[in-house]
Length: 203
Image: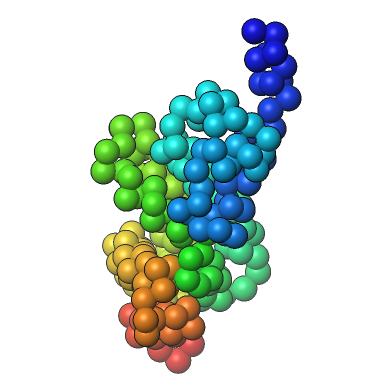
């Protein structure tokens, strides 16, 4: 028991394990992320990883939450910087869309959502919280643009839901490497949609 206690005491911090998991996804792909491989990466046994995370599903969800926390901080900086609502909306879209095929955050996002069919209510609520944060920030940004006369007088919540559905569909195409769909093309499509459906003419 003393040896087990020392092992737990010397185990790397949770954030270090989650960062290592994201690094492995980025470098080797999600299929290479096993509990045994991650354990070797951080100097822990797969048994100790299961002690801390209970299951691979929980590890993946916590890794997604950790990654989302970092993205959320970056999103907050982008949305509070000086500039027009349109400029900040462009920055939001740029942050949302994957960097390219096998983007590690989107790879993880897709896997967690695929596993959510069998997830318990707590896990589903945590996934909903991730989506809710992106949605609330977008609603607030659209509402600000409407109030400043930059955007058409749309229902901010409804427009945000439709824009995020567009972003999700295109982003999945980029993340899985669908032929004929790359990041630049997606950004061009989204810019055109925003110009046609949201911007007040001649601004």
